[in-house]
Amino acid sequence: MANWILKILEQPEEMQAVEDLQRQVWPGSETDVVPAHMLLAAARNGGLVIGAFEGTDGAPGEVNGESQGRQLTGDLPLVGFVFGFPGLYFTPDGPRPQHYSHMLGVHSDYRDQNIGFKLKRAQWQMVRQQGVDRITWTFDPLLSRNANLNIARLGAVCNQYHRDVYGQMRDELNLGLPSDRLVVDWWVNTKRVERRLSSRPRLQLDLAHFLAAGAKIVNPTRVGEDALPRPGAVVDLETENGAVSQEKDTEDKLILLEIPADFQALRTQDAQLAMDWRRHSRALFEDLFNQGYLVTDFIFLSGATSRSFYVLSHGESTL
Image 1 (cartoon, rainbow, N blue to C red):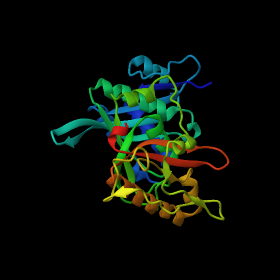
Image 2: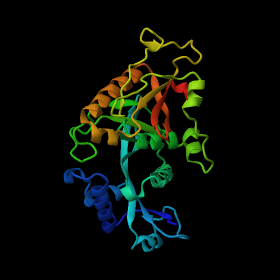
Image 3: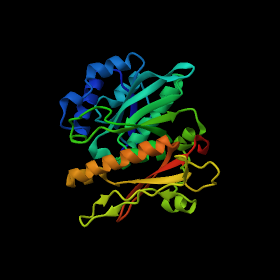
Image 4: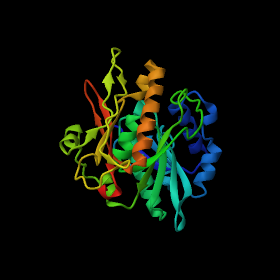
């Protein structure tokens, strides 16, 4: 049984392994690879690169930047990494420090083995030690796997949607679509995040729980003859002057936004449908964020007919 060894990476040969792994995770565009020398420069100037290596039973599965860690991982394959660097965000009281998490990648042969979660948890531990209280990053809002990790498991929240953040990307996972992204906030010292990262498993709420609480699906999908999900008609919300009424107890304060359960498979089968989903979800997110909604959870229903939903709450008091 494999045991994942996590280690802070600081050496040139380690950064070369990260560079090589990027080519496997995001194939097809050499110019989008962050080179080893840039990774090394960032790591030596306040940034953080953590690698996950496949070990064996009995090997320690923890962050280890000492020589012992280098000995342990010297001949082991790098199967995942997370890379980030320090930055600033701006408030009415002036700029404040943050950590920007630029890349998280796991080799395709090792996905769905909890490696991404372990890497993010290690990043959380290290950034807290630096005295920084906010980590932020972007991700494609149509990727269920990423949304489930970022929102449901890690406890990040989101109320920003940015169009075509990186311009036209050329790797195989992004080619042909605008690089729209959600921007998440991961407040590392909050009880919300600490509970999500604790050793006690969080109670998983499914669609039935949210529907019973009065949540409304604003865009229930319809399945075409080709069995691919298509954007459904948008349900009107109860609003007053363009905003949800604050006097309502639950109605329209908790809503569900549906996306394809496997967007990459859909994109491979029907490029035009993928573009339709991009435009559809873009319009919904932008409108809902303008109304004061915040992404606070994510639902993934597996099975014969998988479905995925963002959970949006109205007002930050819901946190």
